[in-house]
Length: 121
Image (cartoon, rainbow, N blue to C red; front, side):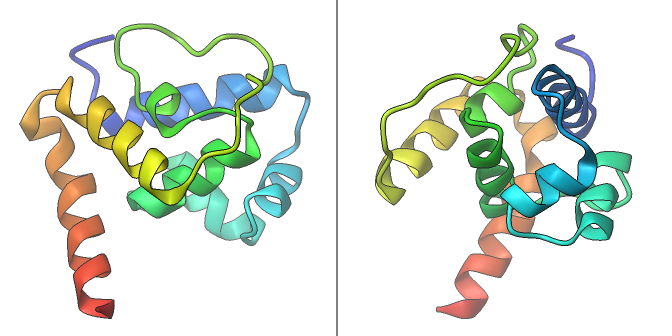
């Protein structure tokens, strides 16, 4: 799984967890506070999600962004019960996950996230 692009890993892990939780795409979209067509674009690979979007989808699946972006192993079946996270803890976990990956794999996510984040500020 290590040679697979990060977007494909994300899609596969989201779909795996979504199915194990018996969620339809529309249900997951609602839990992630987005419209089903928007979620479908991420799950079809037509649009690369930003880190905040990955975090929203992870929260909706009761997991972490690190699990959704993990190239080493598939996600555990079913939801993972997590303690509440502060925004700082979420970002810290995401950075740890990204640090384990090949920089070339991370570039599309990181570039989009930082551009969008710093344009707002």
